[in-house]
Each structure stands twice: as C-alpha cells, then as structure tokens.
Length: 110
Image (tube, rainbow, N blue to C red; front, top):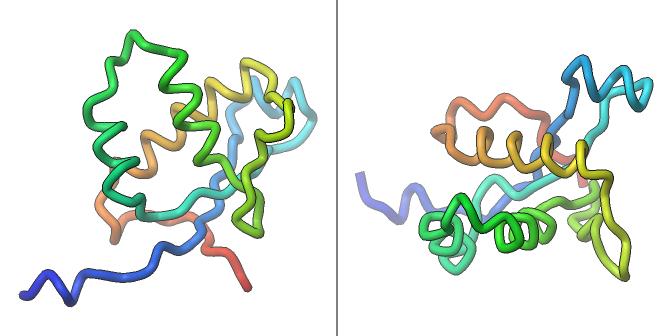
C-alpha cells in the first residue's frame, strides 16, 4: 500500500469525559473535540515531551482541546478546572495513541 492512500485531512472527533468523578462533580459528562490527526510539529512535540514537564504538556494539550467548530476552548485567558484538564490530557493521549481504525468517538458533523 502506498502512503498516499493513508493521507487524509484531519477530522474532528468528539471525546467524552465520563468518569464517575467528572459526572459527580459536574452532574453530566463533558465533551470536547480534537483532530484525529496531528501535524508533524505537534506529533514531534508530543513524542519528545518529557512527562515530568507538566507545563509544556498542559500548553500543548490546551491547544488541542477544541469545541465542535474546531476553535480552541482554552483561549483569551480562560482556563479549565484542574480535574477536567487532567482528565482531558489523559483522554487525548489515550485516544490519539490508538490506531486510526479503533477510534470509536463520534466525528463532528459540519
């Protein structure tokens, strides 16, 4: 198979934060969106990131947490509660680390 057959434009995928702790705290599941594919710059940053460098990890993931239109959620001085941010970081790493065919989240409808 040629690599050109695997190339595609990134698509938004919906991610739910639905742990018992999140649901109890916020009385609902929380959702956000990420692109199913990341550009080379983001990929290299993720691959070479020191797991002990929480500041860079947080900054990188904040840029990846999007709304259903593809706009960053964290912008203009806004921040997420730390428990939500930690859950989002964990979920983004979990989802993007899976092979493409096993991503079972709902794609965005445009």
